[in-house]
Amino acid sequence: MAETSYLLELSDYQNKNSKININSNEGMLTNYSFIHIIHILYTYFVLINNNNNNIYSVYDVVEQVILSLLDCSRKREAGELIDLLKLKFGKDSVRVQRLQAMLYECQNVYSRANEIYSNILEKYPADMLSMKRQIAILKSNGNYSQAITLLNTFLQIFMGDFEAWLELASLHIRLLSYRNAAFCYEELILIQPINHVLYSKYADIIYSIGGADNYIVALKYYTHSLELNISNEPNNSYPPTNLSSIYGIIMSMYAYCNSSGGSLAKLNEHQIELYNWAQNELKQITSKYSPTKLPLVTAFINSTNIKQQD
Amino acid sequence: MIEETIVLDTSIRNWVVIPILFVLFIVSALKSNIAGLMSQTERKQNLQNVMEVQTLMRARRLAANYNRIPSFSFNMRKAYFTNKESGLFALKENNAPSNPMGALGNAFKDQSGMTDMLKGNIVNVVPQIGLMTWVNHFFSGFVAVKIPFFPLTIRFKTFLQRGIELSSLDVSYVSSLSWYFLCWFGLEGINSLLLQERPILNEQLLQSTVEQGLPPQQTPVHQLYTSERENIELIQHESLMDNVEQRYLYKLQNKSMPTKPTPTTSSSSSSSIDQQSVY
Image (cartoon, rainbow over all chains, first blue to last red; front, side, top):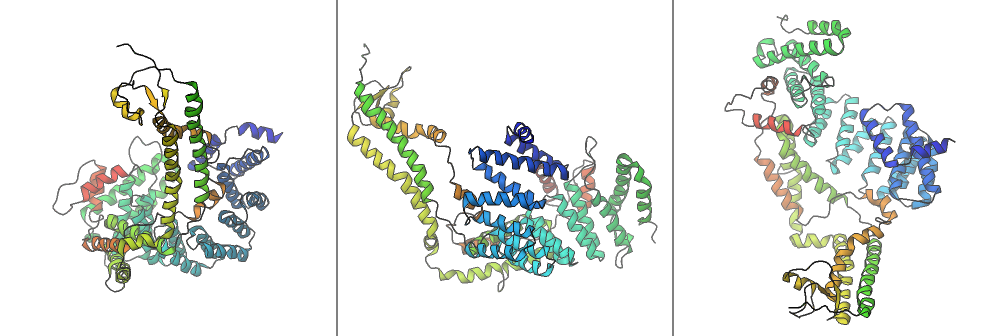
């Protein structure tokens, strides 16, 4: 009975696909519905296969389904689907081999997975995805320094890879080497120059390095992040999304005034004005969207008041 | 003048029009299969090539967005690319003269690209030439079809009556060679409908993501490197962040920046940001 109901739901799988996209964009996908959707797609695939009505584009979906199954660590179903793909495309297909290796990873048999990736790389030295998986294995083993080394060699070749730089940055942050992480974020900024999140993150890292000069740099990057993502327009239906930059502005100026080599007198008039604006903005946003938190925010603002310092 | 209708023999229909149509369809069906078979040889990508392309892209990005990173970081990257001894571009340029053939040598060096091109040409050109000779040889001088409904201007004569030099013949009559051309171009859509079941071969599909690089370059890479190096060397670093606080405050109040001598790019760049931020 369940199968027929799925059949009804799945009269149009493209439609379904678009629905999934919408869901994942909203970020509202709960774990339950995630598995549910996987199940639907899985059943759909089985139906298609039984009807002997294969369309090749289905296999793209199958690959996605396998990946999501592995994410949910449902190894049995993933294994079944991989076996189907093996029957269809043979064992030599690189993509199928990669999926098989990912299944091994999921089963914690890292050595076999690594072996498969190495074999693929021997044959196709420019296979980016296998290299990335090898790095991921090192990372999941907790072998961060080796992962960084391998990622560096990867990035010597694929230096335009956004995710790889992001990953390297997060590994460096994990090992508290902020300067290297800052380098990675500069690279990311060069790749996506108008992504405001990167500026805010970069400022976070620079702030963490510390020192009077760096606080000012952080302040500038927080401001630029806000400049790229102005969310204080009155007709906005969604809450402001760049609060961390507003906090960052206040904090970096506060830290600057407290650090050796920096003081209130050295800030120029625009920076003071920006500071006042940030305080007001923070209060306004809080009272509008979460009034219960207002005491906390007021306490924060009072405790980071740069004007009482001297 | 009385329009005299020419009666076309039914055996012309049976032995000229329909065979041409049929043969053309068969040939294009075969062609799509043969093209699939021939292009199945895998195109391996070497790491060197990938790295060169990516280096160029990275250098171009640096040249485009240099004002978004601090000047210290910019100088670091500038040195990485352009340093005389250890710079990435300098190393390549010093190695470059080992290839005296230049562009030509480079193009020939990449054998796979050449053979692919050759294969594509063979698959497309050979049947076309063969069919044209066939039609020309066997059916030259036939009036094969009459276009119904509407009269055409005299200019269509060269298009529709190739192979027949009769000035008195009405334009709506189509010669066999022209019929062949009409079918050749007109059948594309019908073919794609009928032969659609196998647009990509299955094995290819599951292997295609291995190779996602750019096509082999024709320009020798050290020339591109030299131009990029010069580009980067010419850059005078100026930061977008110099007066970002002021710019932001003005933006909040919907005022434009006061034009000072120093902020040369700030107002224009902030407006370009507005346009881009849709992305």
